[in-house]
Image 1 (cartoon, rainbow, N blue to C red):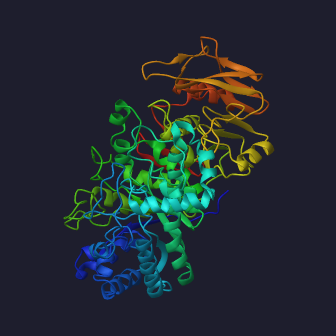
Image 2: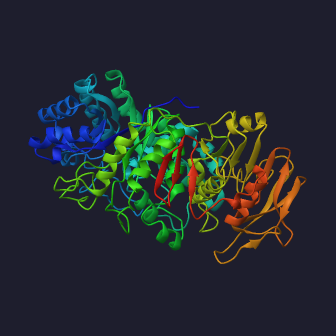
Image 3: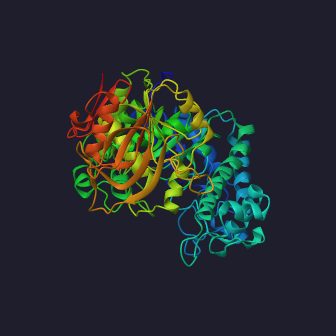
Length: 617
C-alpha cells in the first residue's frame, strides 16, 4: 500500500496579469479558501526578461514573497513554453514546421522546435538564472519544467532543423548507412540511401513512407522531448532541493511519458473532463450527451492511474477544470457537485495535490471564456464555491492512501506510434483498444494499475493484460516467465519486430500459436461469437495447439489458452469483453450496474458519477 498522504488543494495564478495592489488580497483569499499551493511563472518569460539579458526581477520577487508570506507553497515554473518575441529575432529558424511543410509562427504559445539547439540553450540559460535566484527560496517548494509537452501537436516538427537533427540521431543509432538500409528494408521500392545526409523526414512523400522510417522518426521526436526536458532538469538540479515535475495532458501519446518521467520526481497532469469528452473521446454521441456535464468517468480514472505509474507512485493534478473551458467543440457548465467530485476522485487514486486552473477568469486574450475559481469581477464562481466547501471537508479526512491493485494493463507509447504508422484499418487505434479493456476492468469493479513495457516483474498482481503491443521487450518476456497469475495477450500483440518486420515465425511470438492472416472489419460489420457478443475491427486467423475456449460462429478460434496465458485473436465488443473478463475473474462482469457508473477506487472514497457524489467510507 502507498504511503499515506494528506490531500492538499492549490491553484494556478498569474500575478503578471493583475495589478500588484490586489496580490496580497488574492493570497489572503486563497489561504482562507483552504488552498495550500500556487503555481506561477510558466508563461511569464517576456516579463522576466523583457529584452535579451535585461531581467526585471522586482515584480517576481514581490509576488513570491507575497504568496509565501500568506502561507502558500509556490510551484515555480520555467517559462519555456512561451519564448518572447525577441527570441525569434535572435533565432529566426527556431519555429517548427507542420506535417504539410508550413511554418508555425508566433502569436500563441509552444512556438519552437524541440530540436533547435540554440533555443534549447536559451532554455537552459533561463532555467539556470531562475534556479540561481530562487532555487533555495523557502517559499518555492516545487518546480515545473515547461508546460504541457505535446499540446497543440508540437512534439513533431518537419523543419530543416529537425531534419538535420534526425539525420544525426540516425547516424548515432545505426552507425553505417548499410545497416540502416538493411533494418529498414530499403530494397523495397528502390529506397536505398548512400549517406545519412540523403534522408528526409517522412512527410510529403507521394504515398505512405517506409513504416520503419516513420517509426524511427516518432522515436526521434520522443527522444527530443526527453532531451529537452532533461536539459532544464540538469540545469536546475544543482540549484534546488525541491522536487521537479511536469504537467502532462490527456490522451497525448506522441512522446514516451515514462521516459520523461524517469528524470522527474513527480508526475502531474491537466484534467479537463468536459473538454476531453468533447475533444478526445471515442464515445458515441449518446454517451457524450448523457455525460456532457460530468465527463467520462473512466477517462479521468485511466489518466490518474497512468500518471501514478509515470510518477513512480507520486502524482498530482496540476490543472483541474473548475467550470466551462474555452477550447473544446462544446463547453458546457459542469453539473452541480462535479468540481468537488473530480478532485475527490483524484485523491482516491492517490493524488497528493489537486490544483485548479485558474484563480481568476481572465477578461482578455485567448482564454477569457475559461472559468476560474473567481469570476473576472473577483466574486466566487460556482466552481470556486465547491472548492471552498471541499477544502473544509478535506480537513476531516486526515491522511489517505491507495490500496494496491491486483490487475494491470501494459501501456506502450511506441505501440500507439506503430499503429498510427500502419493501422491496417482506419478504426484501429491502440489507445482506444487499451482504454476499452480498462473500462471493462472498471465495470468489473476492479482497481487497475498501468505498467510500462519496461516492467520486469508482475509481483503482487493476479491478472495482467497486454493488448496490441507492437514489439516484445526483454523485460516483459522476463516478467511473464516468472508470473504465476493470469496473462491475457492480444489482439495484434507481438506482430512486428522493433524494425517493423513481421516475425519470422509469425506473430504473436509465442510457442504453439501462429497468426496466419488478419481480417479487418467495417464499422457496420462484425463477427458473432458462439457464446454471445461479437469481435469487431480486428480479427485474426490462428493456427495453434492451445486449448480453444471460444470461436466465432464461422468456426475460427478467437479465445485460446495454454497454462496461465490467454490469447485473444480479436477485438471484443462490450458484451464479449464483459463475459471474457467474467470468465477470467470467476464472476460475471455484466452484472455490474452500468447505469450508475459507480466506482470504488481502491482507497476509502466511493465515487458515483451520475449521482455526483464522493463518500468517505
